[in-house]
Length: 218
Image (cartoon, rainbow, N blue to C red; front, side, top):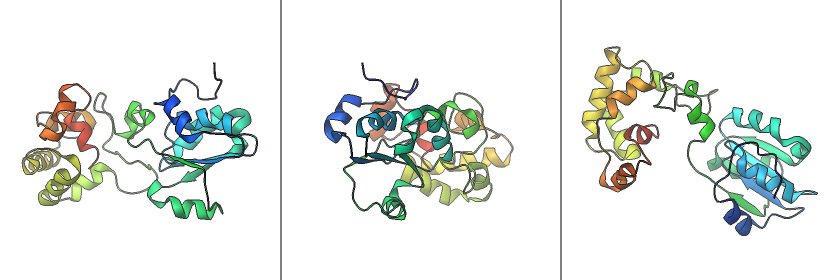
């Protein structure tokens, strides 16, 4: 059995990732979406000695959580605070100009969903936040306070892939201004009655996606 400092988080497609990335001592691998650190924890023991794992995440809490689990491997891990879209700049700042492998597991990480205070969960009430980086930018509540219905509808249609974006936007705005949307479960009750576009409907019917999950991408 492979021993890793990953704790109770199970990285997805672990065997496939090991086959594709071929981690070995001395290699430099970038985990573009650090999240709970499951993939990084899987790879770290296999690149030492001499190798490094660079973990990228907008959420600074991802770094704090992982440091508690790395133990003897901590010196071989380097956290890059930012979006993977700016990966070239982040690596250049560390004077890294070539890497041996890249990994990206896109989406919201399970710790962010599990913590209602982050505002991503629709199962338990949490603040209207939904920021990937809680130290920067506007909260969802601040956005809803200022955004007009037309702009909100455009965002929902572009990023949320939902039907009747105009109706949803109007419903959200009306309920927010009336004080009926104060947390994430309130928001879920408003948008949960709307359906996804056909492109997402099959996934929804299998229980993999709820309409409010898709709206969190906006």
